[in-house]
Image (cartoon, rainbow, N blue to C red):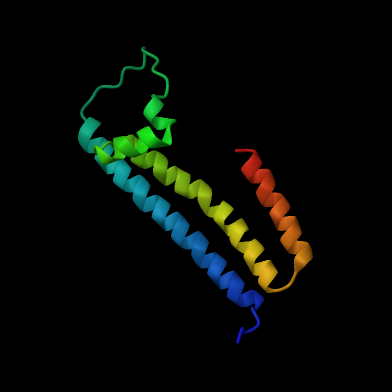
Amino acid sequence: MLTKVRDADLEKVIGNLLRYGVLASSVVVLAGGIVYLIRHGGQTPQYHVFKGEPEKMRNPVLMWKAMLHGEGRPLIQLGLLILVATPIARIAFSVVGYLLEKDYLYAVLTVIVLLVIVLNF
């Protein structure tokens, strides 16, 4: 038997989702920063030479390969991606919550917001 979903329950779950998403993002960025400093901390920056973003930072497959080889920058990038995905996951979870509450107007409005965000990526 399904029990009625209350607003307080949804707020608690959504709060935990945001909390753990930011925490996970922080841990991944910190790990990437440590790896980066271990590998490149002693290098002197060359500000007079412009180097664009390498392909491995724009292509997810190459990014994963670089992380598996122990590179720090792609790991930092992953942490930032988790940070951006956290509020989007909150919106997606809100849709489910509104549907469980049978609050269809808010569910439709939240789906529209989610579509706008996803289409702007």
